[in-house]
Image (spheres, rainbow, N blue to C red):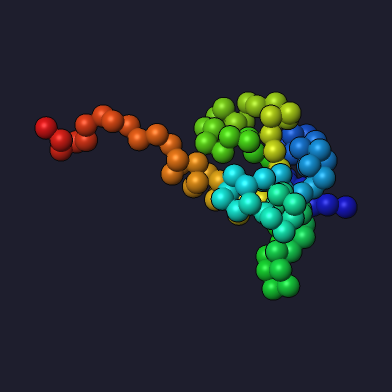
Length: 109
């Protein structure tokens, strides 16, 4: 039996079952996952490597920049299974590609 989070299992479990307990990142993290046919190979409760850490997948929105309050209200169908490494890298990558605000800075006069 796979481990589960202590809370929100009614949301987490359907997302994981739909994903086959495998991270659903297809390159949003900046890694094309070429060795795994374009999808992250990390699986829930598996280890990252021989001496690595155990992977615990999370259910999170496909748009990694969704604010937490909105993400908590999303239906199960709009969530994906993410490994922590892909989710963090995808959020970092998405923040870098946001359009720059053209508003003047604090010291621009």
